[in-house]
Length: 241
Ligand code: PXP
Image (cartoon, rainbow, N blue to C red; front, side, top):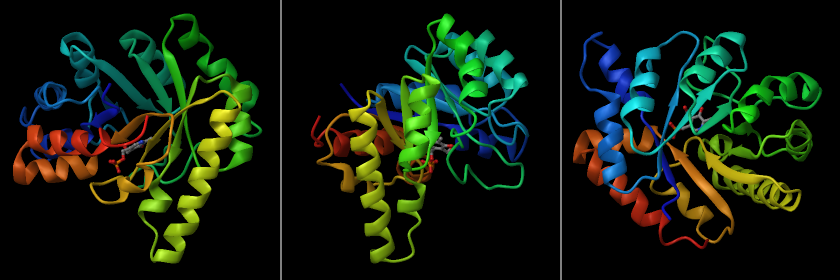
């Protein structure tokens, strides 16, 4: 079973540059699925800088694959997500000024609030995931909140300035994955993963999904989305289960 879920936000980024119809995230998503991706991810941001509400509904209606919705834990997003009914929601922190999601969601101390926030999704059998840093306290809190999944933030590893920092960040992630799996959480990975740095996870067992956007959409500009997705699927398919 392929483990790649492709984030198509930046197809919408290009479209929004001219506020037109092309390129269309749905077409890109369909091609990504044909090329072997398991699912499609979009992040409906509060400022609607890329994906628009209509994209999310359109994807849900026409895509013959799992749709994952990344969202902030706000009342507005909760209402939209419950209408869309994606396969999975992933709660992320959101700041207006950031270029992309910068850190993981703070779960510790917000257990009750986040448990209540995800309750209606659980009722509708929509899977829930929390995007968190490789921090054991946050992981424990995620388990207490009752999400089925966590997505461990790989961005700090991807952005490390030197080999030593990279090694340290990777160590933290590997420890976090092991701990999360031990306490019964299903683990996805995402943020900043590309065709080179993803190899660090080749021997890590039990990863459910990889959430990858920017590197695939960037490569797609040169080689087309089908090839870009296929190349990433081929890498991940060599990894241990
Ligand atoms: N996972 C989460 C929670 C994200 O916010 C993002 C960026 O939208 C990604 C994964 C994908 O990151 P990238 O575009 O760097 O592959």
